Amino acid sequence: AISFVRVSHTVGGESDIDVPVQSFVRDTIDGIRALSRDRAMVVLIAFWVVLDMVYMPSEQIVLPAYFEGKGDPLGLGIVVSAMVVGITVGSLGFELLARRWSIPVIIRWSVMGCCTVLLAMAFFPPLWLFATIGFLTGLTWGPMNPLLSVLIQRRFPPAIQGRVFGVQLAIFALAPAIALPIVGALVEVFGPQPVYFVLVLSTFVLAMGVVF
Image 1 (spheres, rainbow, N blue to C red):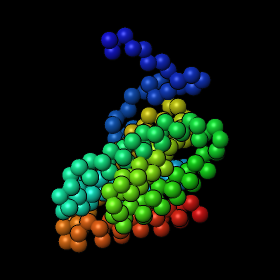
Image 2: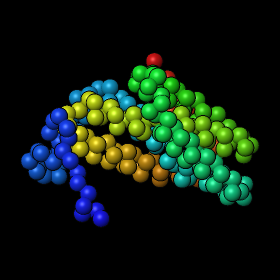
Image 3: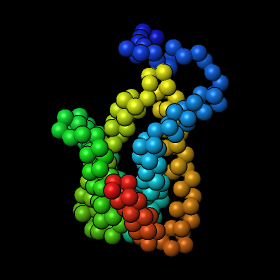
Image 4: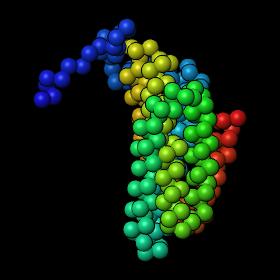
């Protein structure tokens, strides 16, 4: 069935598939150069990377360590599921938000909302509140996923978009991989709650700098 799917070229401009094939390294360098010339995108992606370096270790190390210590694997499942559902709803709600607010306003409220809610989660409240905060965390950050795709399509020529997307996704994949062993070692020494509080507080301070 896949062989019958037709992928059309970009309407109104050339796409990546119209550009002569280059080496893997050359394509990567072109993507990095294009991205680095856009200061606003660099700041946004840098903040996203920092948040990713907090969120992924939280989901995969901090929260499992906390709930394992409590002997409550069900609680872990409920909180993580609530976060995923929140992200799903937030992503689907982007179109509705985009009709009412400008992109800078959506970015500002998503960043502030997500980091404020994460800070509340760092106090490790009762399970029902933990799950509610997890849902709100996903809900406030969810619109950023489609928003970033829209920004790349608006701010970069079609001929370079594929390489920019590739560099962006590579950065998002690499950042948590660097953070995971570091956070794991810190949790082993200091415990999940102190480590998580410091991580989230640092992210909150950084978010205020990005917004204001």
